[in-house]
Image 1 (cartoon, rainbow, N blue to C red):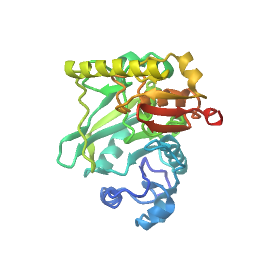
Image 2 (cartoon, rainbow, N blue to C red):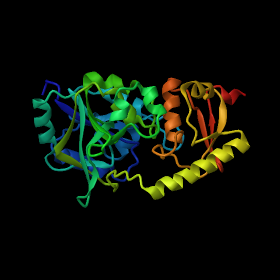
Image 3 (spheres, rainbow, N blue to C red):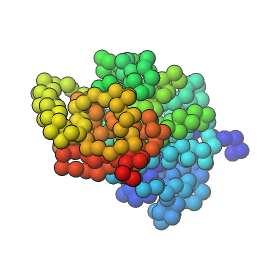
Length: 327
């Protein structure tokens, strides 16, 4: 028991999930050992109240955040630094292992020269929730800022016609070699394409998507199946026109506008209105400056400083930079 484990699971949680007890029991049942190959990262007192063994807790109290934008990379990085194992498997508390996950991961990672990876995820009814992801071919040769300037996400399913050979990860579940956890130093928050950015940062490393074992998600989801239909394109074409018109008459910025790096940098310390009346946060495949895309780009360009304040507005979003609050 003195040698460091090959792999340790770290469950990322705020301690309030209704699934936490159920998933923790399933991890233990599959062979993971509390305080050695299974840990929970979240507020210590709340986890103790949930019955989590003290030896398996990495104490982390989330600093204040806007809506869903909690400091996910900082939380994962701190957890990785606190635990010693060759590989660290970061999962959210809605995931539980299917029987045999521990044995399969142990066998695969002992025999493969791998830096990072992930596994398939199923819904409780057996339908696919998540399958292999890849970096888009168009993003591989670009630096991260240039890749984020273009329309769309940086990742896609492995079956997509635009898929490269580079394995990508989903932020909800992935494993990473302990020596590479520095990749989590980027100050990304939840809903800031942190999985796209991490996948891009890992593009020169060896990834592996393991299909011989899987997780179960207790929160049902549909496996990504991006269909760029004519009807959808027409809807967004109309929405783009409306947003651009509102931006002109209000002297604001539209989610349909493309921002180059210079224009983005000029906004980082300012405050402005982003026109997006339907609040389509995640529509980066159709909108050049969706809220998630702008926040991702700003977080990288400002080393985590912008935007310090985000408020929902009838016409979209009010964003305040790291100096704008003093104006």
